[in-house]
Image (cartoon, rainbow, N blue to C red; front, side):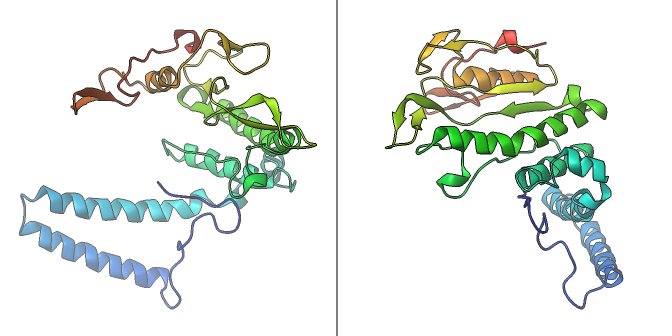
Length: 265
């Protein structure tokens, strides 16, 4: 994958080095292309050579296109406001969401957005003060994410875009820390949500117990969640398997997994 930065230049090393003009680079690449073609003609049946040349040519085309995609100045002032780029609270995640919107428009098929990172105060890991922590990060992400989802509807990409939001665990109902309502990790019960193409929205599937520690109704295992994502992407998790060390290995793991039918539109 390629990492995009939310501040400064989204992609590093996109500009020509000092002393190299666009025209000079173009001439060098044209010469390289001619040499590649000459080399290719003497080795007509070497598929690995063909693949190597084509991969480098594709990488260059992607590099050229990326400059335009990450240029947020092409978006209107109204769009910047909707994504929260003018507010220091939402600006960082807003830039991530706006870059995501432009990547989706350009045909990128898989994008991972991060909220939080670095030391503990910059993550959703509210060990010391869960209420303050979650209010902070929800405030950073709510407006930009809503703008991204609305744009997918407005530009006709909603039905072919799957949104998956969540983390790897929930929080315990018991307090952790002294004087502040911190919460520890809880893998027994937690929530993730889906939206977009193929998803039946406006519902909650399953429920935790009264304390929020365990599952009281309609448990959904992580493997089932993964199977559902694969199904929405047009892939059968049971067919994507290979035999290894006595087990049928699948993308959902060796154990049985089921698509969550209630989540499907």
